[in-house]
Amino acid sequence: MALHALLSPGGSAGVTTAALALTLTWPRTVILAECDPAGGDVVAGLFGGMLPARAGLLAVAVEAGRGPGHARAVLQGQLVELYGDFTRLLLPGITDPRQAAGLAPAWPMLAATLADQPEDVVADCGRLDASDAWPLPVLAAAATITVVLRPSLRQVARARVRLEMLAQVRGATQPTLLITGPGRYSEREVAKALDVTATGTLPDDPRTAAMLTDSDGAGRHDGLAGRPLMRAAAAIAQELREAAGEPEAGTARAAGAGAVP
Image 1: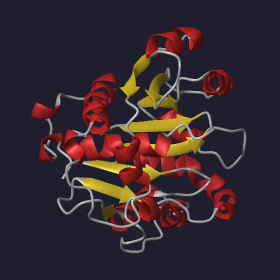
Image 2: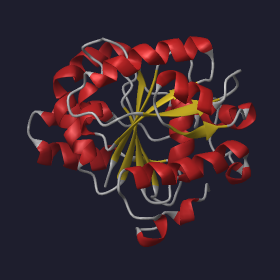
Image 3: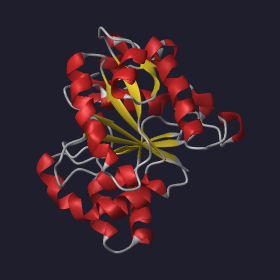
Image 4: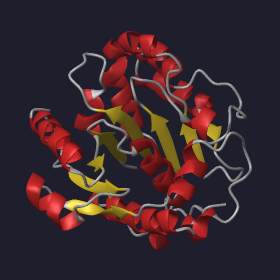
């Protein structure tokens, strides 16, 4: 299926919250891949560390040099369930940012492996910067690229520079914007200022965001499906799939009708 890359301009834009919300409302089976060179947050944040230990992305990188077949086989063994229905899966990222430099040579093969999965993949790439360790090959392989930012002047200024950087990535598709959280500017104003199409807006919903990213333990997520953040994420997830040329959820392999468990 398709690889969907999410990144931020920095400054706590909410890219991990957005990636989790999209994953939990995705209309078919999906893998959330933590590709942020600064390290992954989901195991500690959403589940308070209460998930089976996996080497995750690092284990796939170790096998990447042996060829795509090895990388694909190892990736499947590194996935953990976000919930017990096998439709929301997590590929944990690195746990120490000092490991990022070792990933750099493996990113081309890692990106190709993620793009070649039978499931859709949402890649949380963190803050785009000029580091050699940043996963630029993921952008080149992605069917959609989404820049997550808050509607503030500071975030717009950061995003303008990152959009210029994206324009220099060979093979990268045209990015879109995803607006999150509070700010003085509308989605339309931000999109016009940056001359980029906006996919949508995730509303300011701090309670739900905290449950997703800083819940200090597993299992306390009842009722998420009805919350404003998750309802908006479900609509945006479908838009991203359509932008990638994928069939509507009703004609694809179902993933619990897109409902959050």
